Length: 450
Image (cartoon, rainbow, N blue to C red):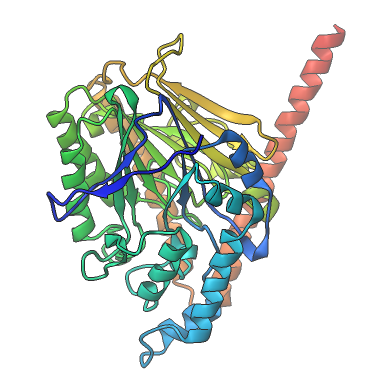
């Protein structure tokens, strides 16, 4: 049976929430992914997505690699230029079309069972590590919204209405269940000087829409880059300033809705997948955050850089300052994320939400089942949290000091140094990983034959 989507705008506020009606659905599925089409690479990942029959497909950044260093250099480096040339626009549009007309994705779009949503990151924004200064962002904005089939009447197309393409949706399900889905734009107003990812207008909108929809059965926040982890050197991150503002808003929502116990975060960008949990719930007013990163639809950290999972772990301060209960193993292969929400709560363990990373083979790689009705986390353990934060900050500060020192080299020496450090860490982690696996294998053989 085909599902038709009733999407209406609420005009009660200048900052409106879109309504998506799935009230005939007792089980709702949202699939999502990021990092697609790097260097014209393709995969059959959407063949597996089709089999899962999601109600919504969410592009979570880098849906196409539309940026090109030559374009960025010429546009940003020439003070006389204020926009992209037509040839540059055509190139970017062709990159989006390569993703849009993937045969399996075309089936997903045209079968009229799955609604397409999206938010961009840097590569589909049009500028690698892009920020507010990108001169071509309004032109790429139109191309991106065309790519995800955003309605022509959408306020996301109105540059004078809002400075970016952030958006939120209230998904109405059976049994009076609702899901508040919030898409955050971390590029359009990103100020690299103040390190503010969102800008004043988006922060104000985010707080307003969170509070207005505080009674939703489930809140999902989607960002092109990771939110909980503190990634280092080579990877984008929210960092302390932005996380602090987000946590402050969550604390306000918790006061309005004391029953709020958990909130789900979705992210992409890093070319691997992993679960994360916030170890200190006092920061969020007792709300447990569960983040599931899904990244690598046509390439992964392993297929792209031959980067082992052990190295990825080593460059994350959480690896050294928290135990493994606050994150899952890494999935370092082609993948997409899948969330399944049960409005009737038929699961024997009471879990209403199932969160998975799925592979090219259709198998579940990592999974968490979440009981959203559990009581909120205790506000205690502040002393432990403070100690943890102190250790965490010291490691981050040390790494950022090294990063700044390297960036001060205005010659090839700086680039050589950063790659040398990366190669040494990569080699060390590979050796350690191989030794651990060899010892584990040897131990299992000894145990078997003794």
